[in-house]
Image (cartoon, rainbow, N blue to C red):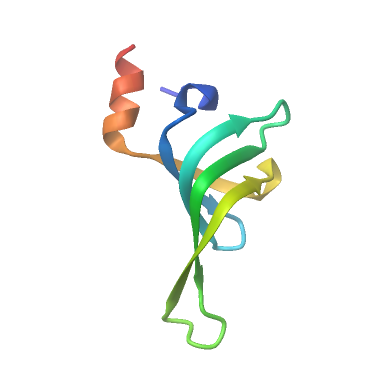
Length: 85
């Protein structure tokens, strides 16, 4: 069952992007073009030198263009809550 992303505004989510970065944050806005705006965000990416190392940095407010999104993940409890309604 696919639910509209707008139903998850205010929910914590993880966005995997096409360049292997992952952003964890709270969904705040979905614009008419499908771009996502997340607050309280952290970016996780592979270190370019030590490829086995993951770097995590706070990015705060971040806009993620729709064409850069590979996967959107939501906590299973949050998904089940919205699925039930």
